[in-house]
Length: 422
Ligand code: CO
Image (spheres, protein in one colour):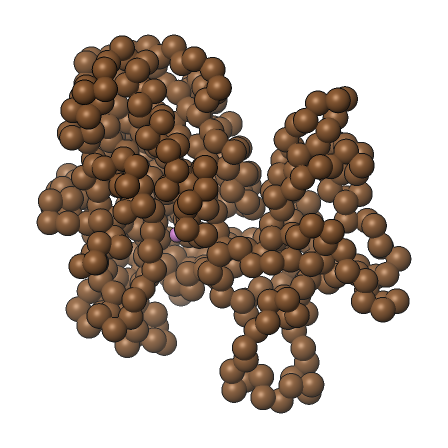
């Protein structure tokens, strides 16, 4: 069962090179499962026993189901669809003498830069076009090895292995083609989208790593791929949500965007997207605002974003006692300054949930002299204040374009969330 889940995760990652494709894959899955798509700009007619989903910006998605019986609690899981990447700038083609065309890109999120070099890359995201007089959005994925950021040979910088400070404007521009290929980039994008290049008015396009995900290790215990943070949790959230019975709660699965750049966009955790959706569920059930507040008071949220496992070469970077390992189970994250919202109550609730699901859990706390990262739980709580636990799956190389996790842990989270939505 671990392997089946791990293979499905790799398939999901392969089809989700950017947050736009991740939402599209999920959307198609929910439609197949009999969910109804709602539009934010229309009135919602909700029914008891109904199953729905809504997207915002085509890069964030919330699915929910309403039980047959009167119910006063939301069970929410929140993850994120985006990962650190290089974003295509306006007018990206840059000619290098008469030799090459390279692309002008900028950093999206806090990335490890070195692993972007010397591997095949491509471009995915969405574009906005004017087609037959109408403004439309189109998904784009140039599904082939297209770009490379070549390293400088060691002969030209003998000190490189002593440490190097990357300049993103100089070092990270990918090679696209020979000089004759000038003007081809937008033609390629247009062809892929089935439009003319003059019709393209806007774009959110990102580079992605083409190296396929793989299961490896002496006992095939590890899994590596791009975008594990946080699509591994998003995938487990979707699977747990779909396999859960969802009879005793208003079940909410949400995947928000832009966590890697602070969440403060209209489709991020700091936005009103989740709050608006919960309020509209409340309205749709014919309840007043006080009933909404009563429902929130009885609700629970699992903020699921990947966590750091102890590194085989840098064990000293982990807390001396709380040291999550790959395949050791779901990681519950704690932080005294509440960058993670886990507290005594929500932590206890989650431990009990893992026990019922018969899956292992482990605990993570930053070393007291290392500030660590942030996530979406506490940001979301400023809009929707509910009891929340911050958890994640243990991984290595976070924010590399090729990250490593344990082959068993995805299944553990699927199981725990199935129990959460039961
Ligand atoms: Co993350």
